[in-house]
Amino acid sequence: MKKLAFASIALIVITGCTANQTKSPSSETVAKTATAQNLTEQDRKKVKKDKRGHHARPMSQNRFEHLLEEYNANNDDKITWGEYNDWRQARFNKTDSNANGSVGPEEYVYEYENRLDQRYEKGRVAQIKLSSKRFDDIDKNNNGTIELAEYKASSDRIFSRWDTNNDGTANESDPKSDQKSKYQWYSKKPISFIRMPSSHSFKGLKSIYDANEDGEVTREEFSNSRRSTFYLTDENRDGRLSAEEYLAEFEDRLDQTINSSRRGQIKQTYVRFGALDDNKDNKMTFEEFQISGKRIFTRWDKNDDNLVSTADIGE
Image 1 (cartoon, rainbow, N blue to C red):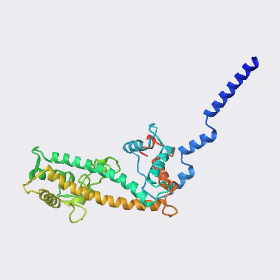
Image 2: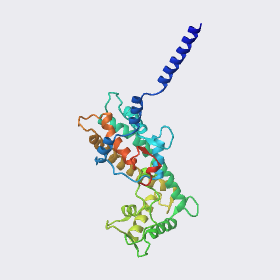
Image 3: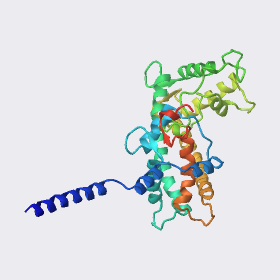
Image 4: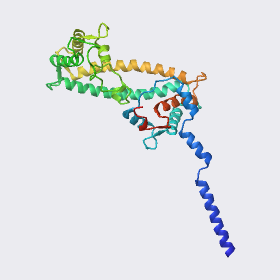
C-alpha cells in the first residue's frame, strides 16, 4: 500500500511538472514573440535610408487617436509592430483576391479603389452638410433664400478677413496670423478628405478668385467672380438663391474636384505598386508590401522605442 501511495504521489508530481512545463513558453517561443513585436535594428537602419513615400510628419494627438482606432488591437493605447504587422497581413490577404500568395497591380489598385471610394462618399456627405450650414449662415433673415444683398454682405466679410490692411488687395503683405484654416489636410475626418478650394486659406482664395494669376486678389477680381457665381447659380432668374440652387452649384464643383482627385489617386497607386515591387516581376509579395509598412511604422515611432504611443506626440 505504501509503495502504491508513493507511486501515486510521484505520478502526481511528475504530471504537475509536465503541466507546468507545457504552460510555460520556451525561451525560443519568447524570443520569437519579442521579435514579432519589434523591428530589428537592421530593418530600422534600412528604412531610414529609404526615401520613397511621404516624409515623416509631426505626430499630433488627433493623428495618434486615429492610429489607435485603426491598429490598436488590444486597446492598450499603444501600437506594437506586431499589431501593425498583423493588420498589414490581413489587408494583404484581402487584397490577394485569388489567394496565390502575391498581389498583382490590378488587385492592388482594386483594393485601394474600394477604400478610396468609401472615403470619397463619406467626404461628399460631410461637404454637402457643411454647404447647407453655409447657406443658413448667409441667409440672415431666415426666409429660406439668399438675396443678392445677403450674398454681397457675405462676400464683403470674406474679403475683409483677408484684406487686413484695407488697401483693396488681398496679398502676402496682409497680416494673416489668425487666418489659418481650422482643418488640417492630414485629418482623416470626412470633411477634410476632399480638399475643396476654399477661402479658408489664402491659397484657396487665390485658386478661386485670382483671375490674372498674379499671386494676389483685388477687390474687383473678387467681386466680379462672386457676382458671376450668384447669377449663374440663380437658374430661375428670380434674383435670389434657393437652397436647391445653392446646393446644385456646390455639388457640381464638388463632383469635379472628386473626379479630378480620384484620377490622380488611382494613377499614384500604380506608381506605388511599381515602387514596392522590388524585383520588378509585376507581383508583390508580403515582404515587398512591408517595405512601406516598416517605413511607415518607424516614422510614427519617433523615439525608436518599438511602440507608437503618446511619447511620440510632438516629436
